[in-house]
Image 1: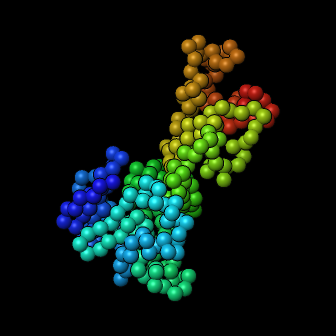
Image 2: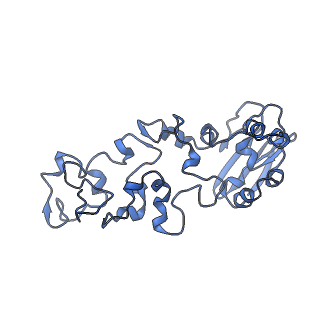
Amino acid sequence: MLFKKRSKSWVGYGAGIILIISITGCKTTTSRGIVVPPPLIAGAEFVGMDTCAMCHEKIAKDFSRTEHARLVVSSQDIKGQACEACHGAGSLHVDAQTKQEKKAAIVNPGKDPEACFKCHLEKKAEFSLQYHHPVPEGKMSCTDCHDPHSTEGVRPGSAKSLFDKNAVCAKCHKDQTGPFVFEHEALREGCTVCHSVHGSINDKMLKERDANLCLRCHYQTNFPTIGDNSGHNTRIPTGPCFSGSCHDAPHGSNYNKHLRM
């Protein structure tokens, strides 16, 4: 990524992204791209990523290969790189003597999602929808699902195998991820095929609220005949496919090939 100086801002160009981190006191200046001041910690100065790596060696090594590592804070007066773009200036954290003092002298995005929302505005909007994971309520944090220091952890499901796509969801939703005797092949593509995981206007964070969810995949040229030449033209208007003791095990079943409980 290349950086060009503009007064007290630095503009970065890379991978189709324009990111501007502007240092103007507590004021956020709107400009081309995204303008985000780093978190403010009163009395703290920027120390740079090399200083952070002295104690957090493994995290810094992994982090240097991530997208977040492209973040740079720099001006005539201050200089910080990557870590401090999200955690704030680190001098007080470095100088603190006790573990408690160190925690108090740095911003922890795992405790406060607002640190993530500064850049990820669209995700903040999704969490404001009726059905969402309880991140705004403080019952979960972004880091429960995302590891911002890992090349794979920023996007759950981007690992090497298709079956890894559901690993993050399976930490909490063990009953829905199997294995099952009769599997729903959609799970191979990942939970996000059916669920909007940050937030949705539909119950259970579904992408569609009724049979249209299933018909995204199960739409055939001989519709309304579906599956084993079974007529569904009178069934679909009555409710979702996964209700009424029909296909009420949409994640998979150990008893019925038609995904019934």
